[in-house]
Image (cartoon, rainbow, N blue to C red; front, side, top):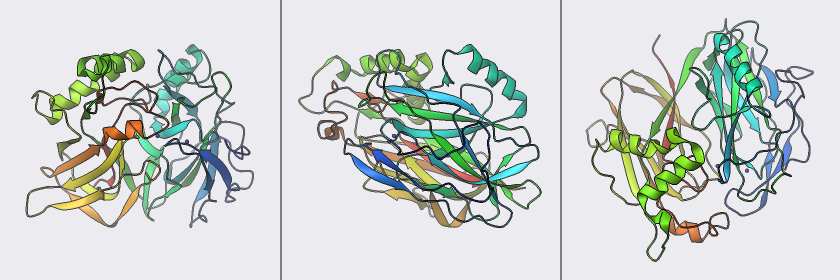
Length: 384
């Protein structure tokens, strides 16, 4: 799964709601540099509330100063934020507000069950500084993905009648990926937050889940590039050094699953087939790669009479990663197959200011901005 505001417009206490529910905060502006090109990004105001909806604004308790561990250029930090739910609700939309666009690569919000909140608070208290390190997921319990933001996304507004269940006492874990390639060490801080759009749990709403469809990345160094990290084994070890053994094992796990254990095949294009085990309706799709991504496609039942394309981005733009609603929901059933295909362009490394001064490397799946991902995302409802 890759962004300074003139003012912080969210409330200052975790779980605080707008002083006047139903009134969105004013728009804010952000200086973004995801691709090394500096520009100004305006964050528009939220869409008007629909019947039964209310806004809840959340933010970090105080500014956080990120620091990349193990000599890397990226930090993944998780913060516990409390929406203050005393009754059941559904999350029907969200708008992430990155407070420091020069640092924030992307953000994911995970729903944490009330029973797991105490463990999260203990982890936070036992970890120096605010929050805790969380490469890959929320780092606590069986957290469920309910919202995300990446460059190009504004407000995620789900179709009427759709929402993520939020039981009373639910907490949110806000995972922020900080890209520190261009950061001023010890100076830059961030205090990002999110505006939630909620309806009461008594409303008739189809509950949603987020499905993740990864594929391998096996991108060799370009012709003429030389260096220790151009060897795959060295590159995998480097990912493990920067992000831990679990992250270092993802390249091998993806190869085992997607290539059925065959030796990795280096190349700019990779794909993976995922067999559907539980049916449902697909309402929206998205694709995520990093700065070397050039194309991504998500297909259903490829090579069969029932084949259809759910997502096709032939010219990938890192700064345009919003969810894409489908014109009509697509039904899937057990036995169907999703295929996600990604193409990466190693020559971009010498053309992007953020990457050109880094040593050449064989690129595998990794958490860092200089690593890569190939990820399809599905927003789905399940049959009742």
